[in-house]
Length: 248
Image (cartoon, rainbow, N blue to C red; front, top):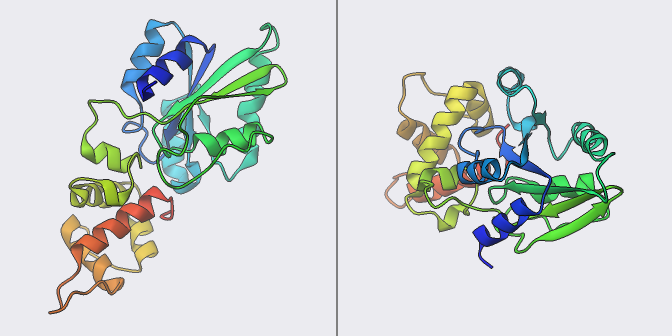
């Protein structure tokens, strides 16, 4: 069964859909095909914004203001996940025989890490590489049944979105330079000081994203023979740092 076959099956057999989103790029990580399919099936959808530890308090507050009935978590903060779990337990009290819950989202958005905390006994495989979960897994926790699904990429997604959402590893992307420029753009827009601090560089506000990339390459000492910056290596490093959540 292909990815979308798995997703369609999990949607049909679930009472609640936990749509796992990346708090750094909330709009880009919203899987619109899944939202459409879930709405057609009249399924309850709960937005769960993961990786909240990677954004500033100001941006987190804006996110909470926009998405009132959502949950804002970090796989490294068990207290935030405890609030989500308590909500699910309360929702499942009067559901017999059990409340069926699907965790759905892009590859590498953190579904398995979340599941491991919600249901400690599950030991779902976690990796920084996309596509680690290959098939549906049902795990029971009291009156709750959790379904972990493979990450899915909508057919209409652009190559830049695929890179931003970490749906494909840096080495497998086509036109990775465009993804790296978009990452720099997002970081400069959200928290200018974060990128300066992480890469230990400085630049003017009106400098181009390309110049910022070159400064990162120079600081990393990614230099080719002749003294030019190794742009390919720099691009790959920036994408990898973003996808692994190193830039806070």
